[in-house]
Image (cartoon, rainbow, N blue to C red):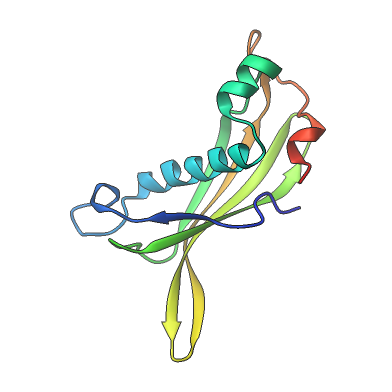
Length: 139
């Protein structure tokens, strides 16, 4: 099941890069977080609405990241997210950051980083696991 039908776009700016001019590895977490927040906004939801109206939080419990190529200043990153597994109280989401490369007459996406995140749904008051609402994943 695809989480976001269209990728979230992020233009790399100076504050995203390290001394070598590459996207600093920790910035990918922030970019991926913005992508997940945008996914909520596209569904007329927000982290605040999930807390105040539905009593749930969606913290990251575990993550694994891979880096394939360096991202650079001015790259336009395409962030995709796909649900790899959905359980009763948690979901595994794979997020990828790719950039467009031109090869002759064709444009291809080149993956530069990916993350597999295990996100758990918890009650705001007890902080205990809570079933993920089905309506959260309806497109």
